Amino acid sequence: MKNLVKVERARHNLTQAELAKEINVSRQTIHAIEKNKFNPSVTLAIRMARFFKVTVEYLFDIEE
Amino acid sequence: MKNLVKVERARHNLTQAELAKEINVSRQTIHAIEKNKFNPSVTLAIRMARFFKVTVEYLFDIEE
DNA sequence: ACAAAATGTAAAGTTTTATATACTTTTGTA
DNA sequence: TACAAAAGTATATAAAACTTTACATTTTGT
Image (cartoon, rainbow over all chains, first blue to last red; front, side, top):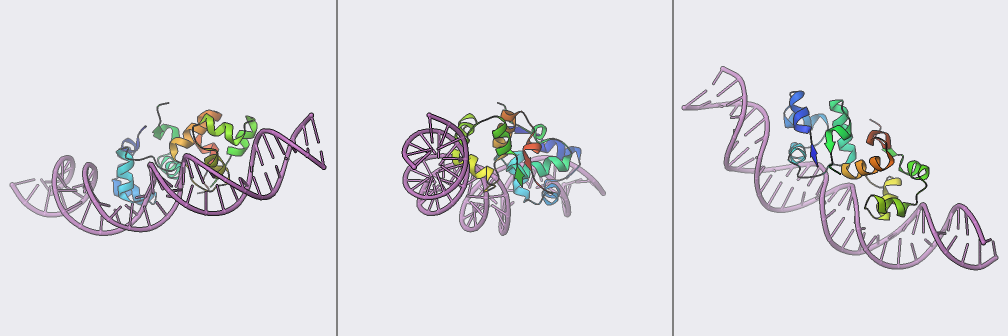
């Protein structure tokens, strides 16, 4: 399960800390998600997708 | 955060146990999600959305 | 090259998801 | 009405998300 958080974050020109603040999580959480350390909750995924104006399915891709 | 799992499950004419089996979780997990007891992981949300052929955003609606 | 900012890493602790089991209540139907 | 299947409820436990703190390493701008 890969994701495009780092890519979208770059596109929006934000640091991990800034994104974290925007969506109300810790910087470590952003880091862990980008590094695929874990599998965020659907509400967090939706908040991120909304923030980036993309779909959850685009942002988080589980390969079958 | 409400969701349309029960509705989609009805549309597909499945029991909680059947849906649970389809997406590889326990029946309790389906029940808890339907009852908004918790907030599933994004991979579980994606599996459900795929199974029902809908989007994650449609299936799980977080109100702002 | 230097300093500051950003990212990476790590560990301990809390909260929540998810499982398993078991029992009760509801619902459909013969 | 009686039975079976499905859904609801409860509790204990395991696993994973997420937080906090702290420090090391890498990147970036000047």
